[in-house]
Image (tube, rainbow, N blue to C red; front, side, top):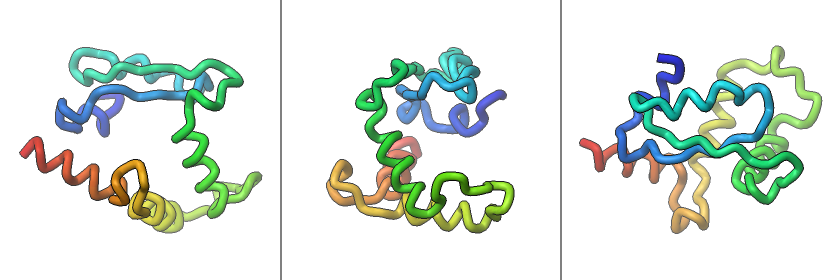
Length: 111
């Protein structure tokens, strides 16, 4: 399976994915395979408002990893710590619950 994370998600959690048009996302169309079941949307070039949550997340990452950070020098542990901090942060969008809480609630619905 090309994208094990997505195919491992319960079907009710596989709906849509929005990505930039960068070459790093060129294979995402494969997620629309019936076995994975996501619909992939690509944002138009130079239209940042189409990817608001992505831009916001990028801004938050910039607090921890400023521009020109050499990620070859960043440890997996450091990346995991930042990932945890961002995913554990309460968000107004989720009624002040964290993304982690919402994710685990959705996983429980499948059980």
